[in-house]
Length: 431
Ligand code: 5AD
Ligand code: SF4
Image (cartoon, rainbow, N blue to C red; front, side, top):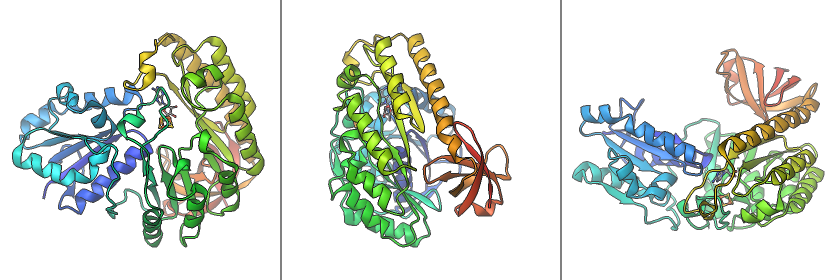
């Protein structure tokens, strides 16, 4: 039996894809390798949304030269978004690769590996980018109490900076009955938290997204439901009311803003204005007053002036996000903005990123402070890396909590009295 190791770079979607492929391979006669050194087959699943991940990936593959020279039968595969984006070019960049498999072709992975093992010729499988994936339901899950469930694939939005519609194809939704079947199976196996994943979860087409949440909310055993990522154009009061009314749906909304300048938002093809986003955020806060709201920003988009950037800072001050992921713009051909002049200098992008992070950190602290003295429900997810007696977990609003406790509490819901709030973490005591 051949042993497989999957190395993943990237977002939750990629992590879930790797888990799916591992499950599918385990059910097709392969075994899991404990390390890269120990593997007969090494798969790299890489994100291509930002350039940084891709650079790391090709460095990692090149590092395998010695291992491959020693183990002549070693199979190296490139899977996921980067595979789809580079296709045969990946073989020129990294001649050690035996096969390339895009996200749409991932269900074929056992037969691709077997074909390489038999023929040892390079294979490129990237033709199913727009196809619906077969429903296979492999059992394997990397964790024991929380799980990701993909509700669909692809994206039709074509934000001008984004490579996703090209590498994950057009939007396809899984049937609600298949999603429910997967969620029920997880609940029966003792999973407590489910995160619904999609490039654009709230544009789900199987039924209304709020309805899907309602159906999953009825499944016994599931205690928490999360979802990501949402696009503002599909975020409706109906969805906010579902967050408010459905007891298992956590009070957290991740709603990427990207920029606070109308001019830049238009160039980004985001289909909303700063004012419209602000209005949405206000409706959310009104309907879910105890809820959190987080976002993504890109700094240094082509043509972003100091004025445009100031608009972003001003809007941040008005909305007051709980936290934000911040990225320096990088051109990602064939995304449309790769043809715009990347006009903001590297140092300027860095300065803007720093200013944004500083402001966000101040706001995050202000947003966290009211938690001091409160008792919050925490799902314990592991031991703090720095200290084995300290546990970490998340509140329903997705804030990280650190507290002292026994590691047998991992996977359990506990109540923690918050004693101290910092910008990125809450510290407390279990009650
Ligand atoms: N450059 C920088 N950041 C990007 N993102 C997407 N494409 C790019 C790009 N070309 C960011 C967006 C998105 C997040 C997942 O990645 O903020 O919401
Ligand atoms: Fe990319 Fe925009 Fe689709 Fe998100 S909504 S995946 S940013 S194109």
